[in-house]
Amino acid sequence: MSNDFSVDAEWDKLYIGGEWTESESGETIPNEDPSTREVFTEVAAATEADVDAAYEAAAAAQEEWADAPPARRQAVVEQFDEAVQNHRDEIIELLAHEVGGSAIMGETSIQIAGDHASEAATLPRRMKGEHVTSNIPGKENLVQREPKGVVTVISPWNFPLNLSMRAVAPAIAAGNAVVLKPSTESPITGGLLFAKLFEETDIPDGLVNVVTGRGSEIGDHIASHPESDVVSFTGSTEVGQHVAGLAGENLAVPAMELGGNNAFVVTDDADLDRALDGATFGSFVHQGQVCISINRHIVHEDVYDEYVERLTERAESLPLGSAHDDDTIVGPIVNESQRDEMLDYVERTVEQGATLETGGETADLDGVDDSLVVKPTVLSGVTNDMAAACNEHFGPIAPVIPFSDVDEAVELANATEYGLSGAVHSGDLEVAKDIADRMETGNVHINDQPINDEAHVPFSGIGASGVGTYNSDAFLHEITETKWISIQHDAREYPF
Image 1 (cartoon, rainbow, N blue to C red):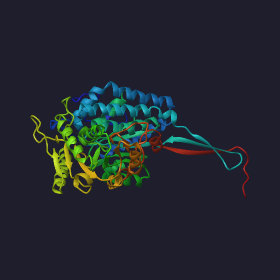
Image 2 (tube, one colour):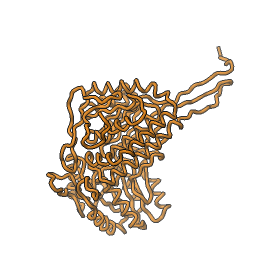
Image 3 (tube, rainbow, N blue to C red):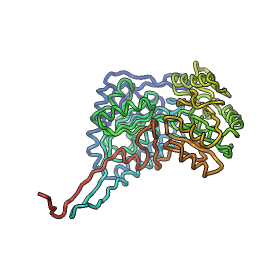
Image 4 (cartoon, one colour):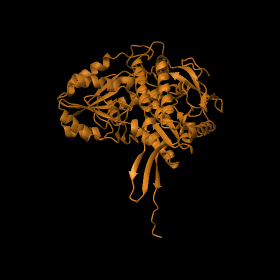
């Protein structure tokens, strides 16, 4: 298979041991464009035997790679980053076709992916050990860091490029091999694309393996594979709990970023212009299909009516349509089931007493039957127990909940099992910091919105939002292990 990154390229092979190969079954899975609702390519449906072959190749290749000098591992990751930048236009086009990513989503994906690759390239030189003083006379203690072995990466469909990158690039940099299983909704941009990009580097065959297929058919086999030492998963809490359980049976380290129900708190003295800028981006970028997007707007009662009115105006002004239109901000939802679920949340919320200010329905697209574009939606008069607020709606939906004082705002923000991200807007930074400190979530952003990811800053969720930490040294610790070596220089006295 040549390095053709176009939409029309052949994408119907698995990548195992440095070779493009058909699945054992010969079966394929259609890949549909959410904007046109047309199948634009087919990908291979891997079997458990294909999965076994991928892990066998990974384990064999990793032994030598673990001993590769830091400079060599760094060079491969830098070459990979360069390949991403060289193919940015093709990648952005693929994201539009595969997951309905707008031009903004595509550019953002490239930028964040590049940040993760650049940070990962520094890790080989940061795998430093330490010298620890001993209580025993004449003993020297050395602690060194070594790669885990084979890292399993199970990536999601919503931001497939950078959410695969943040695990794959550090794993390779730290001396591990990878088996990558992308979502069925994004098998190219979350998986097969990586294989082609790595072919433009000096990486040894077998270090990166990509198996596409249905989670119902190979997911459990991947999550529980005995050759897997770390399982990196991004997705829903329900599926993540299952994956973590399977990984645990094999004593593999689970690194899980799971669901979120992120609160956006706006106090009475907040700069509403800034708050609404953040609210509009944080709710509607990529159709709200972001784990760390705003799920609930918690707004002080004194500015509540103005906030709802202005947010409604902003929502109605956003260009919506096909992801292939450069002017589109709000494109299609990834598939029909996701669309129907979020619209059901809106309908149930209105039935529970909320007011639909705008949206709550699909928008027609020329030449497309059964459009997947959901109009940006604002709901007022919402309470925390209503369907669009207590569930992770994962769509372009903005439920707005009033509060009367800071204590109530914090209570509302924390009234969820999730703890992934959040944001606070206030004119008083001390008040904002107090709210941020009291919010039970892994990430909080003051006078910003909750969609933030910087590769050199630790990123984690608490509660039902996951276990483990991504980014920089924090993720380096997930994909490596420490080894204690002691040297007894002087003869030691023993009690017998």
